[in-house]
Length: 85
Image 1 (cartoon, rainbow, N blue to C red):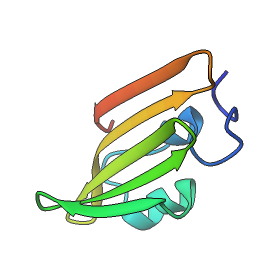
Image 2 (cartoon, rainbow, N blue to C red; image 1 turned 180 degrees about the vertical axis):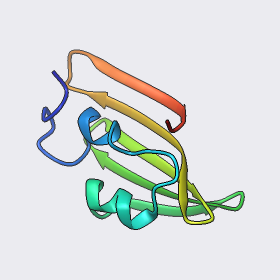
Image 3 (tube, rainbow, N blue to C red; image 1 turned 30 degrees about the vertical axis):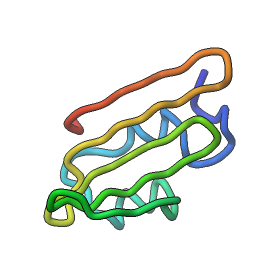
């Protein structure tokens, strides 16, 4: 249902491909260039946004460790947050 609703890289299908320990380059190969980047509390954080939907991935020592997504199609939404599998 949500896989390609937004037409861009901000999709549940892409979020589900991101795994703990992936490098920033590997995540960006899936997601493309982030719309925002920041450094917070010793972690690098990349954010991708499309409308009301977003995916956030936090990296420690260059490796993905935590993710959060909020994907909406206007009528329903899927949200996930926590340590990446």
